[in-house]
Structures are given as structure tokens and as C-alpha cells.
Length: 50
Image (cartoon, rainbow, N blue to C red; front, side, top):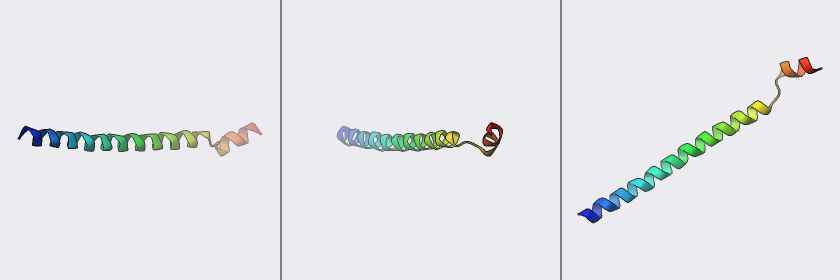
């Protein structure tokens, strides 16, 4: 019985790790998109510089 419980626990840790990795990847992608959008100059900024 304890062997089965430990096996289930290890499987749950693996699944939790995959979920956390997925969340981290999505947050990193969103942060990269926001960073890139901030690098794009807006029309107002271009008009005032000229």
C-alpha cells in the first residue's frame, strides 16, 4: 500500500511541474509581447519628433 501512495505522489508532482512550466511559459510569452509592443513607436510620438 505505501508503495502505491508514493507512486501516486510522484505522478502528481510530475503533473504539477508540467502545469507550473506551462504557466511560466505563458507568462514569459505575454511579457515578451508587451515588451515588443512597447518598442513600437506610436503615431503621436512620431508626429511630435518631426
